[in-house]
Image 1: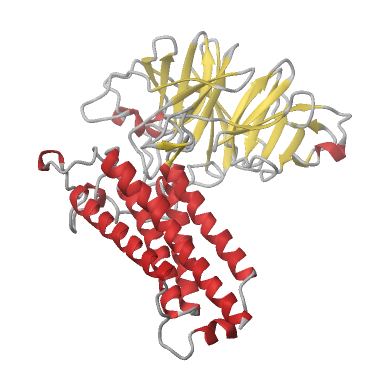
Image 2: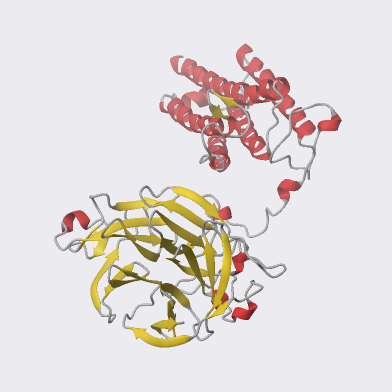
Length: 504
């Protein structure tokens, strides 16, 4: 008899849980937020609300027809889907500034995050209830051989309340969203029964079936590296400067000297820092003397702490330190130290832990936060006395935008982002460039584009391109730019070797 009482208590608790999930989050959202405060759900909100209703209805199935494995499986599957929906929803707003959000907030938390709380609560409470549940045989015996359980006053009342709230949601959904193929609104207007203000929209379907990917807007393919030419960007490179997007070519460079750099790895960047050449290839950095003979070498562990995508540049940092940058805007501040603690530096370096330091003394890794360039890789990097700058490259998702991001050196915080003004041909854009290197010189940034073999001279203060300089099509894979007075040096990896061209 005690086991039967425990079984009845278990079913009553399941009924209570079903009532609460439909009465509280669903009922309050529908009646208080909807009819009283005029809140209309967007189509993501509707999806989460529907998942809660489905969970509550399946729980009522358990109350009516007894515990069955398929009911538990259905609750877990729908809860998992609801967690995905709510995560996708609040993920769109998670990085916004203080008090920015979407729709109404309860206790300072917006409704789309409360959905995440509700779905996790379902998992936790379901686990607790089954942890203390009676024997399965008791639950089976409580049915007494019937196909369904009889209603008690409590269960019947719960079914009626849940049915009313579900019907009310159907009515609200019909008014504010419409019938298929209408999907709802991404930015819904206030709920109203006045037909003048009711919007039935199919805009949510647009683009949903194009380039399907679990990564969504983050499905950006790897950029074009010297050591790994891009094959999935949908970009073809052109070395003819006359076909560039710019109306005019202001200056033309000519090659005076060409020499090989004796590194057997395809180099992705080259810079001249404190009297020596500093080159990079993937996760390796080479220090070279003036004759390009290797004087030192390191290899970073790209997966320690903040993951670093292949290195795209190295600049001087502080007095005698360096900052390397990955194409994913993750950096490492490091320095030379012939007496480095190898055990401490092991974390950052696969090779060179006894000669370089990336831990302690204000060094270490970090990630840069951007806005306009958030979904772009970066390839160009340079600095002045106070700031350092990164430039984007086009990708399979965006071939129109070109953004320069400006960061304060001492705290590596974003200070500005801009797309420079330019004198372009009709229907052309700066996203056609493929800037693989930048160099700061005499108050200007010179952006080297592998595509169309041009160098854009950028006035930082006025955020505009003032001159366009072309370089010969003989240089087919420009990777680095160094300027000394009126002499330009361009490093290119082509025909299986790294070559440095001097031009005037």
